Image 1 (cartoon, rainbow, N blue to C red):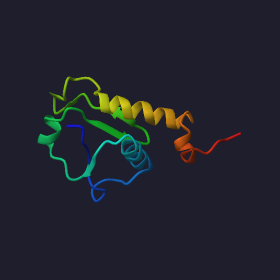
Image 2 (cartoon, rainbow, N blue to C red):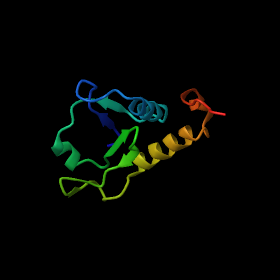
Image 3 (cartoon, one colour):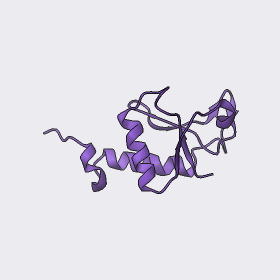
Amino acid sequence: KGIIKTPPVTGILEGITRNSVLELAEDRNYPIREEKISRDELYISDEVFLCGTAAEVTPVREVDRRIIGEGEPGPVTKHLQEAFFKAARGEDPRYEKWLDYVE
């Protein structure tokens, strides 16, 4: 509980959004483990979210028609989603380095 798991980058794209979300999680003291994740683990997870350029931070409600957790975005997902959007809007100076302003 309270652990964020992500697959190792051997099977997925090591993207900017993924690295940003992991940095946000680390800065908020969420433990992170990089390891393979089975479907069975997804089924019994408290929360599941996806991240990516288009997805940003998107909660997952169900996997294979099985409801995840309470069927609603969980507190960790909401916390990271809020932090990600604040950083992307330039509202958190700690992540100013992520932004390139256009005039």
